[in-house]
Structures are given as structure tokens and as C-alpha cells.
Length: 311
Length: 311
Image (cartoon, rainbow over the protein chains, first blue to last red):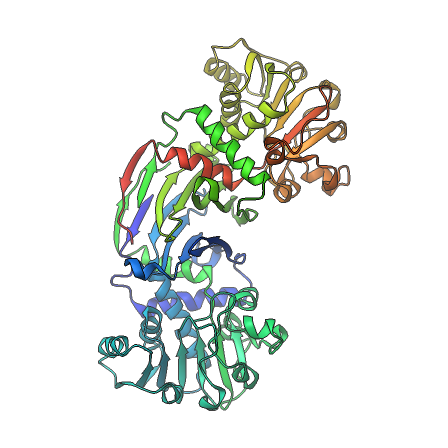
């Protein structure tokens, strides 16, 4: 059994995108085993257990990931993760992977796969709402799939906005008013908001939106009026209804689960697509265990390994 | 973060029994978070993911355990396990525990707690069906709670029977015909049978049975006629109906879930008890995540530790 640390070092983002895309294709074809995430509530946060088996990549395992919003006050990340990989033939644990940064990267990869398949334009103005680790992961991953002409970044904290712009100096990257950031071809929303911050009138036709922030009941970033104008694709039906961008509008009756246009997996295999160039499309991301297995498959070829005795 | 190996070395079985008993008490009082095990099917077996939070012991985590019946052919255990422990305040992974032998011990401890509370006699003839790791773990744990006057062991393989008898040389321990082994005060059944091997006429009144072997759909060891004569206590209602000794009789209509007398947790807190000295009682064990947390709490004070970098 090996413990893999620093697994994000030296990863080829294009390769990660491809691996995650292939996992979504298998999901679209119904070839994976992936029960819904199981939530356990702790005093200051929660943790989620995410088992899955992805036959086409010959990998099975479990990601364990917490969300503790007060952690940054004591210098720890809000989200930390381990992925355990089991041998398919014997069930023996093969690898324990430090998956904290991989979790950012696999979510970025899902956004890149969605933008690649759903954006009607391949050269884009990219709007980014929020300046944290996930905002950066989305831009890095999308840049492998689409040509970014310009980045318009909005965040509440000017110091974080400047840090974000420094990270992407190779692009024209400007701090923007939120309305101006929404005036783009692909919009990425990555805030932990529990009230909509993106107004419908700011979103023009033909925009593709990666709605990343909402990943637990009660969270939402988009004015429900946008949902009414848009075609919504989810990563997984059950998870999106429970904890995605649509969870609050479904509970308040402003949106119905049967209006969902399809899953990203169905888009990847060509079973579903955007209805026209002027449609607004939304990818509602909650994060799937198969994304974690897809990136684990690559990460185990990198990073430092520590040998551990087992059994 | 620490990796704990050899965690079974030097454990005090009485202390393990007490910790597991306290976990069952919390379960009986409804104080734990423990969703049902999640099963993933692999080509040659399966693995189960078992998250839980046990507030009274201040411990939370996940056990990941496989069952691969062909493993012994290549020199590996059928069952192997890891337990991941998270910090309650921050969600950070604190410990990874090699839980293969702990899994045997915590199941043994549950059997000991059941026998202690449900056997009408405190000095017992102990009948044991099966000679594997779990048979040995049951005897070792029960010996801490009840005075064993004699052990009657039955197994198909004479070499394994002899090995078992050698392990328990401190007792009068005799190889017995299956019918004679069932003529006892406390009977432990630990086989992976999928057809009943214990006949009703072999079980006399006042016997307590730990039915350990059935832990997956399709498995059963006891003639359903025994269930009809007995008071059945389960570890967890949902798990027992799905995969315990009663799973087949419930599916075939020979037993109804509403006939279950109660849970072991309810017995431990005195809410339920055997109805009389002549009753046959059965403890139907499937294995709970809270048992794994209860033994992890103790195991982390023992065994070798390897420091691992995280996050």
C-alpha cells in the first residue's frame, strides 16, 4: 500500500480533462457504480463519503472529503480530502491519496469538459465570479479546451482579485464590476452564496454558465429567472436535485426536476446537446466520485510515494 | 496524520468489549449518526463503505472493507479493512488504521456483549460452528464476559478443528458432531453458508445464539423454524433486514421484520430483554460502523504509528 502526497505536482491538465471526460462518458452510458454521496454532520461542518467503481478505467475506491467553513481562521483549508484506491481483483487497499488539491482540479476539469461541449464559441471572453482556489482551477482547466481572449474577474476582496489577476498574467485579465464580468461567453460562478448574486438581465443569449458554488442544500448563486431562460445540464440527477444550483428553486417550486435537459455525461456521448447558438446553457456541478477516481488514476503516476505495510 | 499498523497487538479484550458496549448503548439511545453501509460490487467480490459519528466517544470516520472469497487461494485474507478517522472540529484526517484484525475483534466484542446480556446462564457450555478467524474472535471475547466451562467445536475440516482446539487449550475444548455442538448454553455460528445448516430440533430451550455468518443478501445459517421459536435481536434494523440472518426468511415470507424483538442497543440500555429463562434468543449480527469507531478509539493508543504528511 502506498501513500501519495503532492499528487497535484506536474499533472498535465489536458490529460486530467480527458480522463474526467471519459468518466462522464461512462456515466452517460450507465457503465459506472456510484451511489449518492453520504453526508455526516459534525459540530463545525460535515464530511462526505463517495464510493465508486469505474470499470473502463479499471479503478475503484472512496473519496472522503470534509467542508469546514471556519478552518481558514486557524490556517487550515475549508475542504480536505483523501482518496482510497482498492485493487479490483482482491479488494486490497492499494493507495491512499492526498486529494485536497486534486478535488479542486477534478472540479475544474468537469467545468472544462462542460464548456468545451456546451459553449457555442471556441474563442471566448471568460467571466469569473469569485477568486478562490476553485475559480483558479476552472480557468486553468478551461484554458486547455478553449482559447481565452480575455478574463473578467469579480470578487469582493480587492487583494484576492489582484492575486487572481497575477496568477493569470498571460491573459488580458481585468478586475470588473459583477455586471461587466457577466457580459461574457463563458461564465464561471464559484462563490459559497446562499442567496442569488447573478441577475438575469446581466446574462445575454448564447452564454454558457458553469454553476460551481452550490454543492450543498441551501446554496444558490443564480437568479432563478436565469434557470427559466436556460437549458440546464447536471453532473448527476440525484445529487443536483439534493445539493446543486437547482436545489433551492426546486424546493421553492420555481423549477422542476423534470425540466433538467440532461446530464453532462449524455452531452459528452452526443445524446444531448444545446438547442441552439442563442440558448443560455448551465452546467450545474455538485462533484462526482467518478471524477475523483479519474484524476486519481493519473495522480498515482506522479507525486511522492511512501510505502506502508499492509495487510 | 498517522498510519496505525499492528493495532490488534496488546489490546485488552475486556476494554474493547466495554467500548463496543458503550457504542451499542448510544445506538440504543439514538445518539449516533450511522447511515446504512454502501455496497459496491467488484468482479470477484465487493467492498462496503461505512461512515459514522459517535459523539459520546468523540470519534468520527469511515471504515472501508472488502469481501473477496477467492483471496485465500492467493494467500490474502478474504476480508481486509482500513478505517479513516477525522478530526471532529476541522474534518482533517487524523489517522488511517489497518483494521483487518480489528474487524474480527469488534465483531467478537458485539457477540460478547450480546451473550453477556442475553444468556440466562453466566457459566456456559459454548458451542461453536465454524473454525475461522471469527470463530476464534467470538470465543476470545465471550471468555471475558462469561465463564466458559467447555467448548464444543464443529467444522468441516479436521485440520482447522485441531488448530482451533490448540488455540483454546486452557478450556476443555472438544471436536463435536454438529448436533452435539448445538447442545450448549451459548451457540456461535460463523460460517458463510447460504443454506441453513443448524436444525431446529438440535436447539434446546434457553439457548442463546450469536448468528454471525450471515452478513450479505442470500446468506443464512439457521433453519427458519428456529427463528419462529426464538426472540431475535438485531444490531441494526435496516442492515439486518437487508443482509442479516433474517434476510432470506424475510424475502421468502417465513419471517416478518415487525417480529424482531429489538436491537442489541436497546438490550444494553435495559429497554428490551429476553422474555424468560426458557426462551431461545438470537443475536443477528451484521456489523456496525460504530463498532469500528469504538475499537479504533482504543487501537489508536496501541500499535506502531507511521507519521504521514498532510495536508
